[in-house]
Image (cartoon, rainbow, N blue to C red; front, side, top):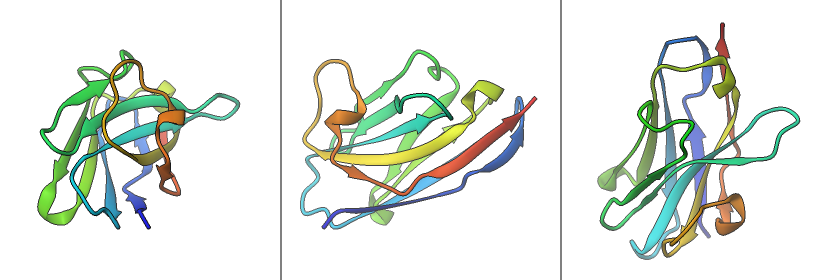
Length: 125
């Protein structure tokens, strides 16, 4: 049973930084992808970034490219989301997700079968 547990959300001023963490447990191989998604009130859940665990290939949405960085620590089975230059429009619940294998083409939430509980990120102006 794959489990994901996020942490690190909070309140930050615009221009500030936060780092989210997600511990991934229950995996039996390295052939999988991990991603971060977010959902703002009244909006659909949207793709933020993803990484192929084996090899480290990354993908980013245009809205966060150059500001957010996804990384992993193999020894800790943890994936991180470093968020810099935060904007009020980044305010959302952020979810960590995982899936078997990798994805070719656009990424959306339906591609991922395992989800964490979410962590709130609020950016004040």
